Amino acid sequence: MEGEQSDTQAEAAAANAPVRLGPREGRSPRDMALSLAILLVPIALLLVFYRVVLSGDAPVTIDAAPTIQEARAAGAFPVAVPEGLSDDWHVTSASFKKAPEGATLRLGYVAPDDDAALLIESNVPAAQLLPAELSKEAKPRGTFRDGEVAWRTYLSRPGETALVVTDQSRTIIVLGTTDEKNLQALAAAVS
Image (cartoon, rainbow, N blue to C red):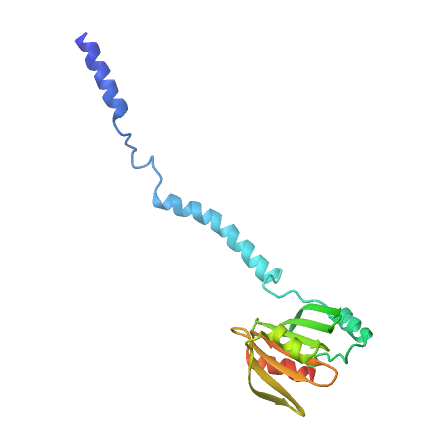
């Protein structure tokens, strides 16, 4: 009986003892690095293919001509279209909306520095349009002159600058988060 009891105790001790793996039986850091490399190489190749071959980082450019034509056909105000912008400018959105207070044309751009710029043309009264587009806290801070046209510069929402010109038939606003020189180039292309 004693022999059986000591065998049972030995088996219980062996069952409770931690399992020790030999040096070749476990996973080494080298094995984990190889496993990660096997996963990361295809991901990196897909990312390079997306960016280089498919131009995945390029902004989606649209044709604004139908929207501009719609605004011109409405005859609410003379529509000014930017001309002479470099190929680094991309039109990303275009909309024309008629409302009881007036009509508004919006053309969204990605500037050469990959920041946003927006061209707004409207016959909505400036006293109503400027607070709606620039914010009620917008403050004039100077002027920008392009030939005979004097644009008023505003500090709009945080990070945004706006250039505004008004005449009897419309208000044109160029605003965005892009560099002020890019806004001036867009304003000059409209004038």
